[in-house]
Length: 436
Image 1 (tube, rainbow, N blue to C red):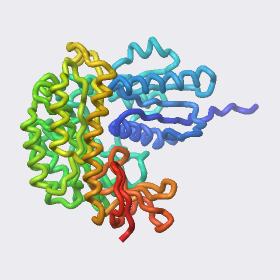
Image 2 (image 1 turned 135 degrees about the horizontal axis):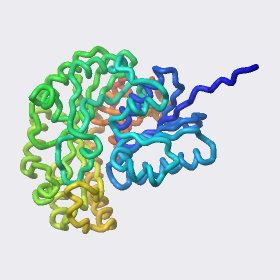
Image 3 (image 1 turned 30 degrees about the horizontal axis):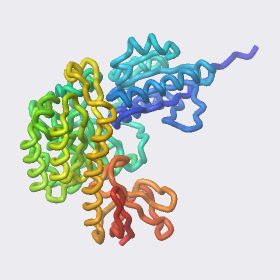
Image 4 (image 1 turned 45 degrees about the vertical axis):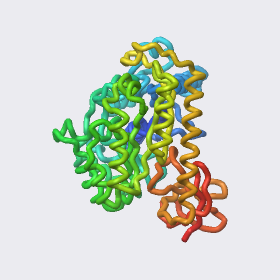
């Protein structure tokens, strides 16, 4: 008599939202793979019978995308296309009870810090010895390094502390271990991420310890670029700029979300900073690191934002001439203090303000790019796409910033290599160059 052998589950992981979610998915994949599970990440033709959706719950559009993705796989499960469906991440953390009622096809929901519980669904335990190990889903030459979890800030528009909890820093030793492991597997660029980068170390070392962490990471062989993302501007530790100036591995790049520039709006947002202080911070950065590229994000349509207040933001952006700038529409999030205010700006007005601000930034970006023509830059080759190799300077992060296009017919390049390129042509958000 033949014994029926139960086939091993194949798992497909779907990641929605930010790079911090991506790191969580990579840790999940690492744990499953270590227990001999066949795991794919967003594979187009996956034959997986188990799907894990890692959700985002930051703003309305992100929540809508997460819910639609869950429903998509719930329908696939009902039709017999998959056997199990699990949901984790920010949306699941925040709306678990509602989601359980509304989408009963999901086998289980888990919050942002419940990886061990999720693993129990696969009859495996969390392997603590894998801390420092990680399967990356990005191209092999760059990876995100999450240096802390959670946030202690109380910005009135933001629900992240509700979903991610209080700030918890990872020890420097653990982060260095992770960096060494990533470098061993070919990673050349580390992008440091957190909900709030500049708060790093206060809980562990009773001081803002990001510069110490940067110095330690710069000692890791194989890592050539270190990039800083999501730095809160209030009480900014200025010695970060000193570290950037003295350490050649730290990219002259800072992602510092300012959110607005009008003092009244900043006060209502509970940002704990004024426009004058923001200007002084940017001026100090540019004085200490003259070659620095500053990326910021702005939030338009916050409750009560008048045309005058928005014009203040426009004037600020035009005056400061940020190298990179992104814009979000305000999303009215329940349980935030901003939710107590009347969301009195229409969706059409919000979009119109987004467009006006991006028109200003487009002109600034084009002007800055034109000035790069004739200059030579060291770039990192990310991929080959059609007739071009696509690369980045140290002033650009993947997916969100400018790219350098190099004609593939004229050169043979390897993805993940650094090359020197002379800029020959510029557009609003792209540069063209030749090897030199």
